[in-house]
Image 1: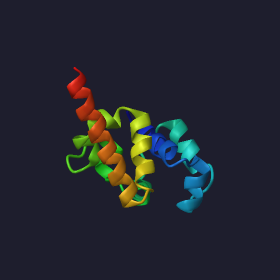
Image 2: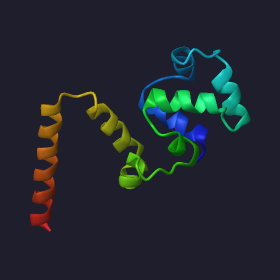
Image 3: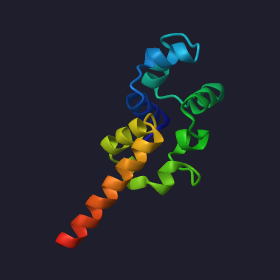
Length: 116
């Protein structure tokens, strides 16, 4: 995966278009699409804007690796786009609701272990 692949994943997870991101970062509408089409190494200022906007590390954006980032700890989940989307949506939920879902998952896992 490249920087541009990771950026596309972030846009998909956040349900944003390239044009949406361009507006939010105050860039020309064609900047992202042209850069992505050329598959160029992103400019440092753009890399930092994207990292700040999505709250990810510049290292992760460039390499896909960052021991402090979530992806190093949850690489199995990161590789499943559906789980990543669920995780993102949970960040928008009330804490009590997320705790309830956690309890439900724990219950289901413990139930499955007793079946086998």
